[in-house]
Length: 397
Ligand SMILES: [Zn+2]
Ligand SMILES: [Zn+2]
Image (cartoon, rainbow, N blue to C red):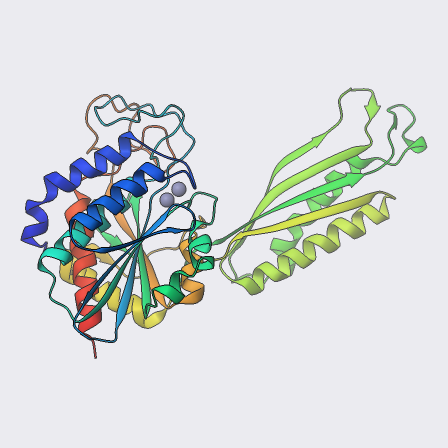
C-alpha cells in the first residue's frame, strides 16, 4: 500500500472532522453547517472558496502554474432522515437525521486530499474540489451544474468515490460503462365506477383493472426488452378501496424502474404507458400515468476509468482492485456530472462492519441502515487516491 505519509500523519485531524460531521448530520439542501465547516477548512489551507452553487454546495479551487489541464474531484455532504441506533461518542446529535450513507467520510476524504495538495502538492494546472449537497433524492449534482459549475470551473474530467460495505476495507471496485442504474418511478391512477360488491356489472371495476395492469407490466421485462439489457421493474404499492363489500371508484399502482441505458428506459416507459392505457380501455376505465425520471444511469468513460484503476493499483496494490466490479441497480446523482464530463465513479470497500466501536447496534450492515458508520481506516486511502489521481492527471500529456 502506497499511502502518503503526510496524509497518514494528519489522519487524527481528518478523523475528528469526519466524526464532527457524523455527529451533526444535515438533510438535503440544509447542509449549511457542514458547508461552513468545509469552506472554513479550505480557506484555512489557502484554497479559493466559492459557495452557493446548488444552494449549499461548496467549490474549492486550487491552481498552480499555467498548465491548461483541470480535474474535478467530487464528494457529497448530505445525510438521511434516519434515527441513528449507534451509541458511540460521535453518534448523531440531530434527532431523526443520520449519516447512514457515509457521505461524512466522502467529505472528510476529499478534505484530507485538499489539505495535502494545498500544503505539499506539486502540480501544474487546476484542481476543483466539489462538495455537493442533496445526493439523497435531491439531485444536488444537477443543481450545481444548473448554477454553472462547469462553466465557472471548467474541468477536463470529473471523479467520485462511494464507500461500499461488504467489500473488504481499502479495496477498490470500478468498471467501465454503467456502474450504477438509472432510477425512475411511476404512478398509475385508474378511474372506474364503484358499485356494490354483489353487483359488479353495475360498475367498472378499477381494482380488477389494476391487477391486470400490474401483471402486464412484468411482461415488459420478460417479453419486450432484450434479454441481455439489464432492467428491473418493481411494483411497490397498490392501493384501493375502504370496505370489503364495496367496489371502489379508483385504484392506484406505484413502483420503480431501474436500467443501465436510456434506450432501455425509453422502451420501458413507452410500453408501460401503452399497457396501462390499453388495459384500462379494455375494461372501460380511464387511466393517468406519471413517469418520473429521477437519476440517469452512472456511466464511466473508458479512458478515465482505466486511468483511475491504474492509480488505485498504485495506491492499494494490484490485488486490491477489481476493475470489473459488478454494477449495482442502485442509483447515484454523480450520473448528472458524467453526462457533462468524462470521468469515473468507483467504490471503496468499507469492510464488514467490524471497525465499529462498541454500542453500535446490531451486527454489520448495509448503507442506509440505522447502525451504519463510515470506516475511518479508509480516510488515508481515499485521500491518497485523490492526491495521486489529481497530480498524475494534471501531469498526463
Ligand atoms: Zn445513500
Ligand atoms: Zn451515498
